[in-house]
Length: 375
Image (tube, rainbow, N blue to C red):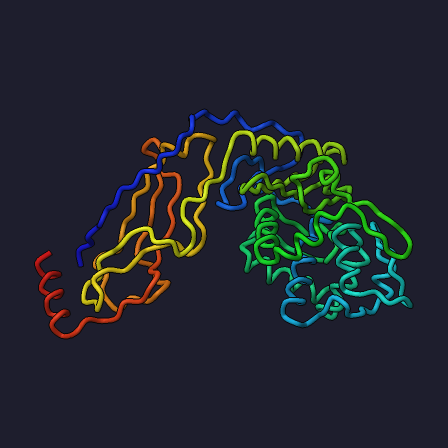
């Protein structure tokens, strides 16, 4: 059956002055990635697909699964968690939990996120998965759901293991999922600069929190093999950026390189909300329908990331699937919207039906059948 295209051209004109973005900064790290949170677009990257050790960046997934267990009702924040000998004796950074002292899930979350406690990570893994090994299986299952196809977890802490690895690309997906799926938990915990447990106060290892008020997370990591790592996020206005730094040579360098990357993104790029989800974009003809048209929209808020000023020159082309024949279900894919700049396609998104359209009566079906034959 021949395809018929309905083309609707729309122009977005804003009073902006276009100016080209400067080249991304050159960073002395093993790999880096800078992404726009709203659109998912990459701004700058270097060896973003290279397999590297994540160190304590692993704990982003440990926190994610803890938030999910809380959401599912498997845990409560006030629930006391038993401290095993393995958790108590965890090597590396610790929050100093003890076997004979009660510790709650909420305290462990603070110790995990702010103090980067390996003991907290182990205790949470054991209460959620039954054992750290079983929890690692859960971590890998969730990683696949998120789309982290080049990640493998062996433990909940990020301690060195040659089979424990990820990429900058996958870490960005992990960070995005954390903020999208658990926004309230993210806001509540990740910007805290210090935490006291067992009469020991420790500062958040993410020094960017102390230097830039726009930064509100996320996690540091370090092992000899991984080097100094930092996943950070910052928000200015409606634009949120996510920065991944892997394999810096020092704590100071991972902070400075992250800040350079974030400043570059905010200085030269902007994220613009084009359409809100379910907002009417166009009307598309429906054959054999009780109604002749259906409203097309996008499933989620649609953002475009562009160098500052370029949005004034963006052109959008809306294309419907044809012939579009009733019945049409709400949420069904019915076309796409394509954005171009200087005759180059910069983004494409699916369009969905905002409402259902039932079938027409016998006469209406006959008339539209004749129309289809004549096309």
